Image 1 (cartoon, rainbow over the protein chains, first blue to last red):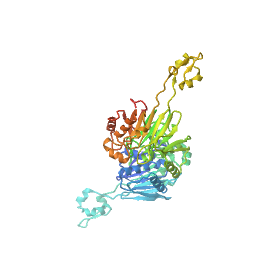
Image 2: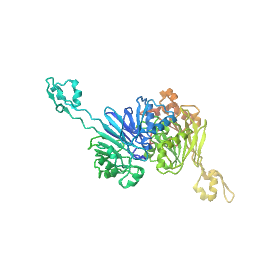
Image 3: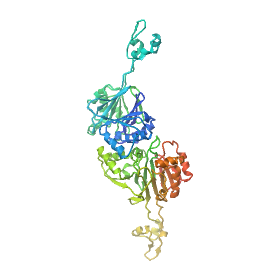
Image 4: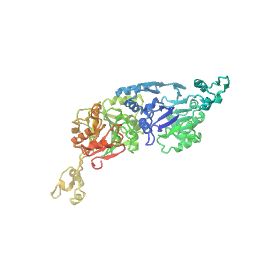
Length: 307
Length: 307
């Protein structure tokens, strides 16, 4: 899984930082998470193929997380898209989007499959061959949701040399991959662990923005490989963070620590910070494996030393 | 007057070209003309001060000319703006904008003064100390309007040396600037042209996008110093231009020629063209003083050799 940051600013974009948007590439499926203004231009700049985006997740209905969607949906249509777009967003966006399409007399070339977000706990919203996606509630000024993308446990890998050594017929391979032993025509039992290697540990990525700090959040993202958590403010602005429904660097780090996350990525930086390196340093005092979200930068999920 | 191009693409932005937006600086008043997605980021990149924009002109209600407005209006508010925004747009945008503000529960910190565009001829929509702005109809798939920004004729300049030479009292200066002669205490008439210099010729800038070619357009922008005219397509795509309500390079040039424009700026280029230099060459076969709109580039209105 590879994550690309398209925007790392909070509500006020700067000349360096666009509003929120992430693209997660999981087994060549592209998941767009939030869609701030300019997302389609950022996709172009990062040479990300529009046609591979089939699922779009909107965390909440503040402009800096969704104002790029009108343009992107129109562009999809101008490009002649036929595949449906699966759009996960707070319920009232269904009406807003329909009004918009109506007002501008836009007839999309494809269907939008709208999946409303809701619930006070984990809700599974997507289940495909390789991954599952769940939403969970955040605490912000409006209903807001985080997303957890989790690879499914893959099957065991059969060791090539063993196939010829024991003359394993192809028809037996699927069962062996699932963990069964192999029994030779002579009735000899070859133990599964002797002819297979364990699969890679499933990786996971969580997106938490926008939210103020709350203790339960860590339990929603327990054990996540890569945690993206907003850190709009530095540690001195705890009160401002609370009032505006945002987090400080230390709060993001505390959640990462409590969640036992592999790596923490902070972003959604207030426009007041030109240089964000001190924000990273603050977070590292609590959670050393912290890195900053930077527009255009990609991160390999699960590779802690090279996030 | 100085024009800055923020976006030169047509409906599909590219990694180099943003959707339509121009900023005209006329005597330190900033006029924003169209507001495609990403306009606020382009303003930042070009270090244009948000607070100096008091008038926004929307040519028509296609996304690539207006989808950046929601973000910009929100940003104005986040920055604590108090001055009203004068917004000139097709009538039905009033309802669209109100619904939007309502749907997202946005309470702006300032007033929007909405001025609907209409009419089949020139309509004066703004008249301030230094300039007038008129709108005029274009021919597109939806109601669309062009804009003509025209400096007012300034007063004559009194020659400094003459003031002391003829001992002209300050109280007489305003009348002399307006063209009156000066009469000395002895009754000698000093002719106005002997003590003043003529003012600079008033400059003008016209914005014509989106539109198909129509003969009358040239009369709307007759004698304009700098004409911006869309040239979405190359000369071979005349039929496509007609059907989609756009212009070719040659059609833009023909209008510039018929209008006796000083300089022609072409833009709104289709995403199919990576290199646009051949489009400029095509237009120059009819109108040699043609230049391309390029994102981030500024043009001095009236300076033909250095547009």
